[in-house]
Each structure stands twice: as structure tokens, then as C-alpha cells.
Length: 260
Ligand code: SAM
Image: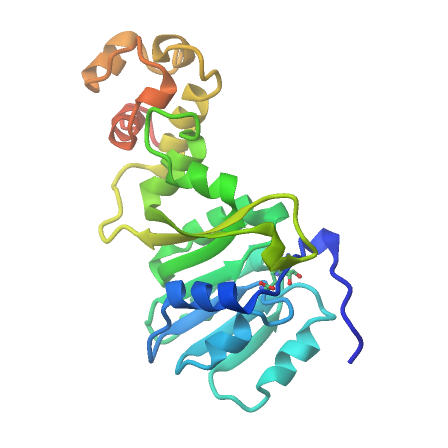
């Protein structure tokens, strides 16, 4: 089969360092009986070592030129299925048909990583955990706590749904072609008890609060929540958005009318 030329439009940077691939699989930690879904398997850098484990594996690849070779790895292996599909339209309920929750993994195409993350978060009841390789800078923003520059909308929204941990740094030299950015592997574990706070209301407050990072909540939330409301949430209206923790934002979101 002819050599595949990496395609920029599909965000193709293929892992090529066996040592780091082994560390990534170690962090994923496949256990017998697990059901994994790999987003963007590409040329199978992670798929092949994952298939060494006693697991079920569904892989979802958009580039139709890569699909035949993915099928060839293990044509007769039970529990290995290749889907030629856009992961942004992936319906996990169609894969998690036996009640087992899925472990979702992938070296994500960076150009669609944020929408893909939110697509997965919208299907959390089917997910046990997720391990994604992303731009290191994005992982730092996802995992950041209040007080620093990295803390923002992405941190609050992801942490509303999941525990977030950055578990492995991956240098550009581990990929072909070599990307311009550093990468990291992030582990996302959905909270055992999902918060009762409406995610749309939370997103509205957080978007508004961080629309002007240098301003105080008194100013940024004007027209949405007044000073008394902010104080009633136990928050000083003179604070800046990066000084408010997730619980604070959840209390503020609780003041907004929810869409029926
Ligand atoms: N997992 C491989 C590796 O680590 O070498 C490939 C990673 S590469 C960064 C991203 C992969 O996602 C590519 O194979 C690309 O074709 C695929 N991809 C891009 N957009 C996709 C989408 N919307 N749905 C599914 N796969 C996609």
C-alpha cells in the first residue's frame, strides 16, 4: 500500500515515537473487558498497541484513505470495529449498546479539539473516562484553578463536568510532521454525581464574566446579575473573573432563569 501523505486539513500529525506511545497506553491503562473508542486513529500508532489488550475497540476515522489500512490491522479480531465517520457527529449511544460505559481516547486533530471535547461532554452518561492528546496550552487552560492567567471559560466549563488532570507531556519531535506546539495528555473523569446546575446558564455567566478579564464582576455582569445578587452568592462584586471558583460561578448561574 502506498505511503500516506499527512493532510493538514484533517489535523494529521502522526505519533512516531514508540517510547512515548507506550507511556500513553500506560496512562490509559486498558483493563480486560474495557470498551474503548479511539477518535482519529490515523495510521494506528495507538490502535495497534491498544489491540494487544483484551478489550473491545471502536475507532472513528474521517480520512477515507486511512480506513482500509485500519481494517487490515486485525481483520478478524472480534470486538474491533472501524467506522469511517466524522467524530463530531459520533453518537456514543449507538456504540455503548450493552450498558458498559466507554473509555474514549485519541490524539485529537487540533483544529477541531474544542468542539469535539464539547461533543463528548454532551454524551457523558455513556462515558467512563477520556484520555486526549491536545495542545499543551489547551490542557493547561482546562486544568487551571482560579487566580492565574490560564484560568478561564474553558477551565470552568470542563471542570463543571469532569475531574481534569494533565498526565503526560509530549514534545513536538514525537510526531510526523513535527507540529509547532507542545502537546500533553489529559485525563478527564466525569463527576460521579453530576452537578444540578444548568450548564447553559453556567456557560452564559462565565462567557459574560470573562468577556473583559480586567474588569470587576460588578461591571461585567451588569444587566445580567446586580451587585446584591453577586453578594447573595457570597462573592465580592469587586473581584475579577479569574478570582471566582467553579462553585462561585455555579451559584451565580443559579440566579439566571433556565430555559424550559
Ligand atoms: N492517532 C493517530 C496518531 O496518534 O498517530 C493520528 C492522530 S492525528 C493528530 C488526528 C487524526 O484524526 C487523523 O488521522 C485525522 O484524519 C483524524 N480526523 C480528523 N478530523 C476528524 C474527524 N472530524 N473525525 C474523525 N477523525 C478525524
